[in-house]
Structure formats: structure tokens, C-alpha cells
Image (cartoon, rainbow, N blue to C red; front, side):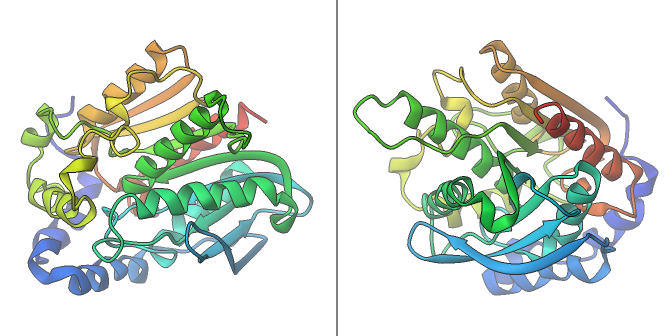
Length: 314
């Protein structure tokens, strides 16, 4: 474990620590503040990029397609981070562009419903419906029939939840509906821990490293508005009794991240259950570092790690 964050992060941390915490400015202020990330992160050219819609649980969802080249290609359905409250297609343009460019996969970024207007399980239901839609209509996106899911933070949680739901659909002998066929899951610093367990990294990295504990608790209050969901394994995948039969996973964790321990624990639990896992630990990085393409070298390396994992299933 590194003694302090990578020096490349210092300008970012200085800027973040001079900005009001998201929970202090309210939902709309938090969204505006998070959206500003897209103003200073670099963009990357892809062969074709366009906006479209995909099916959600209750209606159409905005989506953005990033095609790295001509011809039919495998598809990565991507779900952005932002605590289920903030973020959107624009805030994760650079990550999706770079993933498409590096991996050769077409990336379909999905703008799911956000809390508090639409609390759990709305985002997960949207993510699952969108994944089903892409799986059933690959030709609409130039897909070759191979499908993966991925995301960062909250989006990684949705990807893990969708993978569990798809696995369970296959196991449900009372249901004739077959779930989407997912070949891989890309999980950048996933939210996946039990609300009833205290993870050491949540205390160690409670403040000063971009994502802070109070912000996490505020996100949780917006997203999970009823205690009836607290033991739902689709909300917190580490609660699942059975993690076998899931797609291979790339799990990326960061040392100075409150979510570090649960991400590490999920990677280990997946592997213990017999799944193939590619686990990359960046000891001197913070939560959200993959969005810092062009600022920290580790961001590009993490994209390469994810691309290698995707390449292994082609």
C-alpha cells in the first residue's frame, strides 16, 4: 500500500478540496458540479460517435454509441458512475471513447434514471432492460453478437447487478425468458458492499481523496429510500450467497478509495466461486481516477487492463 497518493493527482485533489462537497449543494447543484468534469477532461476521436435511444424499464433511455471502426464488433454496454444521483453521457465521454479505441469493441453508454427522483431499483431495472435490448438487437449497433457490461463506481454496481440477474434468469426453471448472454463484466472500483459491514478503507479514506464518506452516505440516502432493500443482493452483490456461474470479470480498485476493500473482497469472492477474474490494484490512486485520462498515467493503464480482459473473451 502506498504511503500517499500519486503526485500526478495533487492538482486534482487541490481543486476538489477547494470545491463544496456534493451533499452541501443539493441534488441540482451536485449535478451541475459533477457535469463540469466534462469541461476539463480531454476527448478522443473514434471512428463514429452518435446519440440514440435504447429500451429502459419504463420507456426509452438516451444512449451514446462509440464505434472504433468498420464492420460488426462486440459490444460493451457501459453505465456511468456518480452515486446513482449525478453523472451522464457527457461526463464519461472520455472513458467510453478510450475504451472503444483501445479495445476495438463498440461501446454503448446508457443514461439510466437517477435518484432521488427514481430510487432503487429504477437504475438497475433500466440497466437490465438496456442490456437485454442491446443483446436482442445487436445489428442496431453493428454488433457481432458478443456482449459485455461495464461501468465505474455506481455503474460498476449496476453491471454486477445485471450480471447476477442474467445468471439468475438462466437458473429460473419457472421462467421461459432467457436473460441476456453476457460474456464479460468490467468493474471499475465497484460499489458492492453490505450496508451492515464496516470496511476499513471507508474509515481510512473517509475524507481528502475526492470521494468522501459523507458524500457516499448522502448518495445512499438518495438512492435507497426504503430499508426493505438493505439486504437485496442485487443492490449489494457481496450479500449474495452464490456468486458462481457469472461472466469473467475485470475488477479495478484504488488504494485511496473508500470503496477499495469491498472491491477487493468482491474480486476475491468471484474468484473463490470459480469465476475468472482479472484484478488490478492501483495502490496510489483515488476513486474516479479512470476519468482522469490525460492527467494520470494510471488511467490509461486501467483502460488497457479492461481492454485486455475484453480481448480474452473474443
